[in-house]
Image 1 (tube, one colour):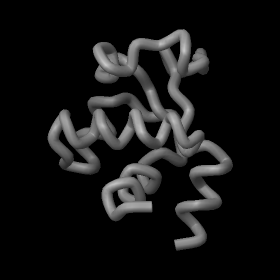
Image 2 (cartoon, helix red, strand yellow):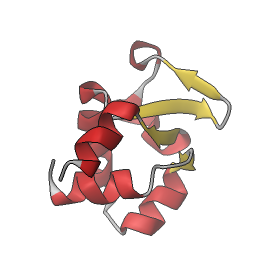
Image 3 (tube, rainbow, N blue to C red):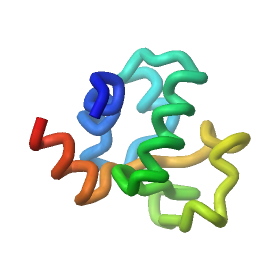
Image 4 (tube, rainbow, N blue to C red):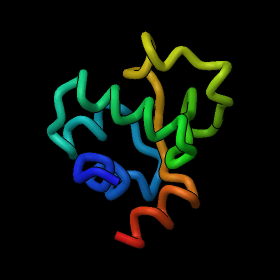
Length: 84
C-alpha cells in the first residue's frame, strides 16, 4: 500500500463524498482518481452512487464520473491499512 493509498483509507472509515475526500487528502484530481480506481479494483474500497446505494464496479463509470460518487473503505482495505 502506497502512502497515498494509506492516506485515502484513513479518510474512508465512513461513507465520504469525493469532494470531502479530495479536501482531506489534498491530492490533485488525477492522482486521487488513479488511486481510487486502483483501490476499487483491488477491493480495498467500496463505491456508492449516493450515501445509501453501494454499486458494483461494472455498473459505474469511474473513469468519467468519479467526482460524483461516494467512497468507503472495505474490510479488505482496512485490514491492509491496519497491517502497515
